[in-house]
Amino acid sequence: MKNFLITQNLYKRSVLQFSLDKCWFDYAKKLNINIIPIGFNEFDKNYFKSLNFSGIIFSGGNDLYKFSKKKENHIRDKYETLLLKYAIDNNKKIIAVCRGFQFIGNYFENKIIKISNHVKKKHRINFVKNKNIKKKNIYTNSYHNFGFLNLNKEFQIIANSDDGNIEIAINKKHNILCFMFHPERFNNSQKDIDYIIKKFI
Image 1 (spheres, rainbow, N blue to C red):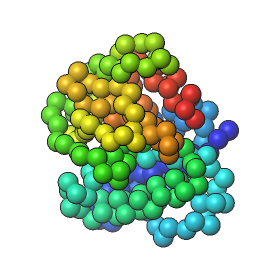
Image 2: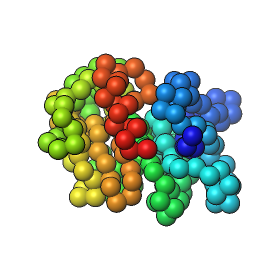
Image 3: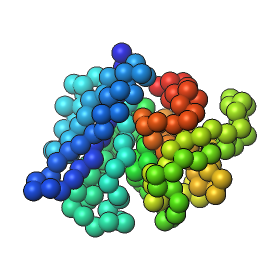
Image 4: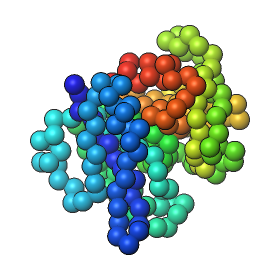
């Protein structure tokens, strides 16, 4: 069974707290992977080497610091930047979900825009012509306020929503698969989404 690190939400209560949805653990079991939640403490390359992991999941939750100037967003952005660089330098597979997609798109200098009508929605997304994908569209959840209409040439767009927002993309050079929706939560086209991830990992 492959190990995947997974980043967590960071919230300010009376103290800073980490959280990760239970559905991630259920979904990992379905994918036959073992997830290892990580905090944002001192970055230690030797610790990561000892974990013997195949990839990293950059999960949802929080906003990027550029959009919400909160301490927890700053901490998360800073740590995940180090983590992303480590993953790229060590040829680890990367799955980015919602906020994770926004973070990675921003890291590669793509323009993020504020969007509407994508929070707590179910919608259709449409595949760009691809010989490896036979379906024209699938139906997914949606929980985000920010997104991309375009990505630079390092990314291949896999699917868009009806209003043109990018919902699935891949960066083949760095082994990065990005979802703007949440594959770990309920989706009407769950089997198709699972297939994309299993093929990638």
